[in-house]
Length: 134
Image (cartoon, rainbow, N blue to C red):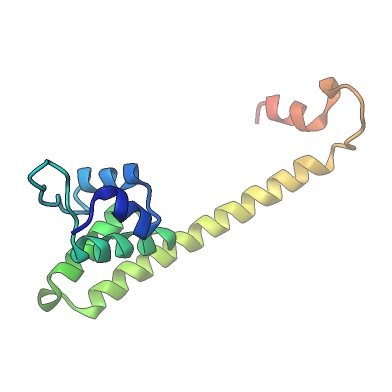
């Protein structure tokens, strides 16, 4: 059994983030010691690492919750369900990439109109385009 501080050290996860995961139900409330300290066990450590890895891969808190629900009751769920969640996430990432590529193209076009001279920004084409009504 370890304290939240030790859990934070071992996992590299900020203590406030651990509190947040508890508050939203991703990490179950740990039992308390006689002195009132929250005491985490290996299951908490494992679950926190799962959450961190999933978040690093861009899964939303809700998607992490969904994955944990599948993991918590593996005999009631299939690999197909896990794959479906993952494929949906991949689709969302693909859409974000397309949106970011469009955004980059627009910014490249706006930026290309500015010569970057060391003159007043008053007549900067970038600023003018941002003020322009489309």
